[in-house]
Every structure is written in C-alpha cells, then in structure tokens.
Image (cartoon, rainbow, N blue to C red):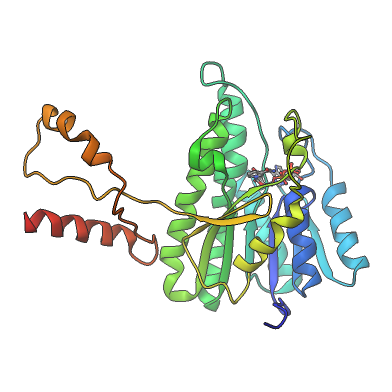
Length: 303
Ligand code: NAD
C-alpha cells in the first residue's frame, strides 16, 4: 500500500496543543494536511488559558515544512466553536477533517460533585463536540466530503468512579457521532469515535510506572486513518490502548419473546433474557435503529 496522505485536506483538531491532539496534528501535517491547531492552553481542570501550547505546535509543524494556524478559541461555547471552524474557512478555504479532542478533568464522587464541575466538563467535551460539529457538518455535507472523529473514552463505555461528569460526556459523544454518521451517510461525511488511552498530563495522580509504553504516538495512526479518505467505516468506535487497536460496538442479547409479561415472568426468565449467546448487533449507520425495530417486530409477528 502506498503512503496515505492528506494533500489538499484541511483539518481542525481541538485541544491540539498538548498530549494526544498534538500527536494527531503533527502526524496529519507531516502527511500534507493543513492544520488548525486549536487549544485554549488551560490547566488540567480547564482553568486559566495560554496561547503558548497552540502556537508551539504550529511552530513545530512549520519547522517540519508543514502548514498550520493556531486557534485559541474555547470549544466550550457556541461562539468559540463557530470561531474555530471559521478559522479553517478564513485561512485555508475549507474543512475536510474535524477531530474533537479537547478535554479537561474534574474529579469528585457522585455524593459530592458540584454543578460547576459538571458544567465545566460537559461544556468542554460534550457540548464542545456539538459546538464544532454543528458549524462544520453543513459545510462537509455541502461539499460531499467530511471526516469527523470524536473522542470518547473507556469511561464513556464502562464508567469509572469519581468522574461522573466525564463519563456522562464521553458516553454522550457516542450519540453525537452516531447521528453525524447517519445524517452524513449519503453525503460521504463519516463520523467515528476514538477511544484512546495514553500517558499524558491527564494521567497525573495515577501511578503509571508499571504501565506498558503508552505514548500518544501509538494512538495517532488510528485517528489519522479515521480522518483519511480511505476510511471505510462510519458510526463506529475504535479503541487504541497500549498498542492494542480494537473495535467497540453495542450489542443486544437475542432476548425472550412473550405476548404479555408479569413481574414474575421477568424474574423467571432473567437468565435467558441476559444470555449473550447469538447476540444481535446493528451498525448505527445508515439505519441501525430501524433494523433494531424491524427485527424485533419480526420476532413479535412470528410468535
Ligand atoms: P491533555 O490535557 O494533554 O490535552 C487536552 C488539551 O485540551 C489541553 O492542551 C487543553 O489546553 C485543551 N483544552 C481544554 N479545554 C479546552 C477548551 N475549552 N477549548 C480548547 N482547548 C481546550 O489531555 P489528553 O490526554 O491529550 O486528552 C485528549 C483527549 O483524549 C481528551 O478528550 C481526553 O478526555 C481524551 N482521553 C484521553 C485518555 C488518556 O488516557 N490520556 C483516555 C481517554 C480519553
């Protein structure tokens, strides 16, 4: 296979001043993409701001011979999201790739998490995704080309103690990606989630001394493939953790059909209801919810 390149493509990457986003930006730029390096330059909790990280990544890209522009708008507001996408249009004339990666973490148990910490994390990750997808999506649909990559997490899939705000946001981004995949299907706009794990400053406070190598550069090729014209999937989730690349997907058990149920019937059938042999899987795009209904109705009408 020849080298996969991005010549002529314009990519917006949020939170690209550090960590995973920086790695994505450097890889796409090295393969010919023009990059909007968006980063507010905040602390791990989302406090303060600094133009330095975005400008430094732009400098690195330019030194290596690539093209990039810094954007220091916040993804956490509708105006900020619009300004980020506008930067791509004003400076490079188009947008082909959108990677929403910006993020912060505010820990606290469900017994004590404040509304301020809930809002901060939802605004950056979840609403942030909407704030950039909303202005970018119509442009991508109109040009019949777009690649969207949203950043979910194992916390979104499985949850984790002391980060309910983060888990809610990361689960919500899966919903946003699925809808972008469904609505973008006929216009060649593909949307997928990356579920990354890497040692970055987000790992501060976690003992990573016994972790296998987990550099952001191990994740970047996965995101880059999802952002490429050759990407053959949409409405999917790819995991990248410590060199293991895999697919996460939703599934249902085949279940049990009865034309009427009592509470006692549920109790009597719970083992069979939960039996994971012969699972059903519906790809979200183009019509996973309709396929789910059709197959369920088929079972109902056959019995
Ligand atoms: P990081 O803290 O190194 O980078 C995040 C960047 O986002 C920072 O540079 C920060 O300034 C920027 N940012 C924060 N709020 C912003 C805002 N409102 N507008 C614009 N930029 C903003 O963290 P990272 O580990 O590289 O994480 C990148 C993404 O990957 C995040 O969405 C994170 O939740 C996700 N993720 C990371 C891991 C991991 O193991 N590191 C695991 C799962 C998911």
